[in-house]
Length: 238
Image (cartoon, rainbow, N blue to C red; front, side, top):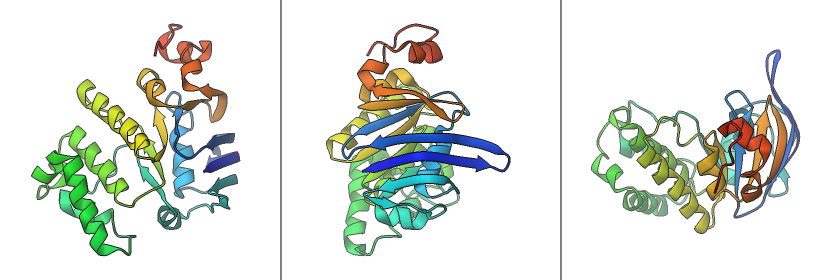
């Protein structure tokens, strides 16, 4: 579904991503793991069309152009950004309406909003509330629901557990697993290696904008580079 070759992204004089190559097959959960500043978020933002880049990003056999976010969204690539990116001065309902703006099947899109309320009942209760008044977990549900309303084929999740309590973190990871079972392909950016490697099929470890190791998630759980980077030398134990 997605093939990246020699991806480079710069922020002025600073190079955030340095020659990354990776693949994502349809139906997989592929994780990008690494510390802050490793280039994970930059990679998914480039895929989503939010950044200039050099190198090749091919999605379903078609090369993506830099800075083409709306075109990429219409092609089936949806991003839930780090920090959620909700519209705080709009209501929950208005935020969800923004999730369907690129769809032409308006009647079916409105039905999908009700399906999101069925999936996330708390959003139905809060539908008239300003999004800024939601809890962190509720805001993350809203951000994911809004992305799903575009009916993506590839969902990019950037640090979805950031700032969440342990119970809500578990909910989010369970949700990601259920989305894969429904046929959605997911690229997951995370620092929580223990949770991530439990649900991912494959993973890439990034450091300083480069891929330093990659493989099946179960194998990487016991990789010395992973355990040293995240757990002080202790195996992840999945």
